[in-house]
Length: 200
Image (tube, rainbow, N blue to C red; front, top):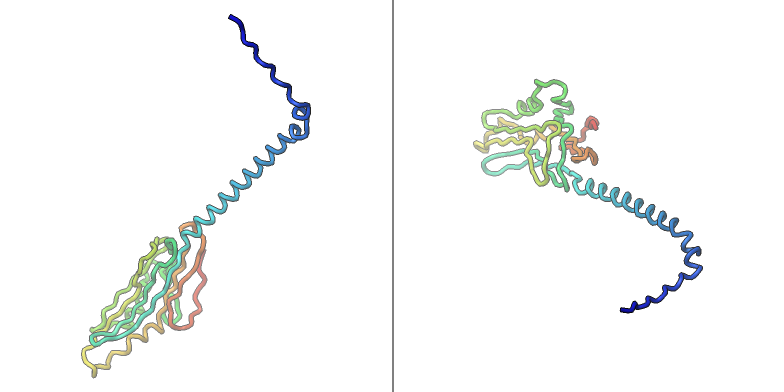
C-alpha cells in the first residue's frame, strides 16, 4: 500500500503572527470583559429598582357621611390602591387636634374619646386600629371608624348631628413598602391639622 501524500499547509502570512491585531487582541478581550461586567452591574441595579417600584404602596383615604330614611352614618376607611402592600409604621388618632396615641401608654384606648362623643342609646359605633408592622395587602379596604345612628322620628332632635364628629376626629397612618423604602403617610381629616412627623 502506498501512502497518500498530504498537502503542506501554507504558513500564515507574516502580518498575522506579529501584526497589530495579534498585539491588541488581549487588550480588546479585556475591554470586552470590562464592558460585560459594567453591563451586568447596570442591569442588576435596574432590576432592583424595578422590583422596588413594582411593590410601591399607596393608601387612599375615604371619609363619608350621609343619611337615609332609617339612619345617619359617618365612616372613615382606608384602601390599599398601590402596586404593593403597605407596611404600617405609625397609626395615630387625633381628637380635637390632640394625639390619642397608643405609643404613649400601652393601656390607652385611642378611640375612647371619639366613641364617648357619639355614644348614646341609638348609635352603633365600630372602631378599629392597626398596629406597627401590620402588613396591609393590595386591594384591601379597611373601615377604621363607623358610627350609625337610627332615626327614630323626624321630631327627635335630642341627638346632635353625627357628621360633626368628623370635624373633631383625624387619623394619621405612616407606612412604607416591604423594602422599607417609598415611605408615605395618609391623613384622614376634614379640617386642617398639624400632624406629628412620621418616624422612619
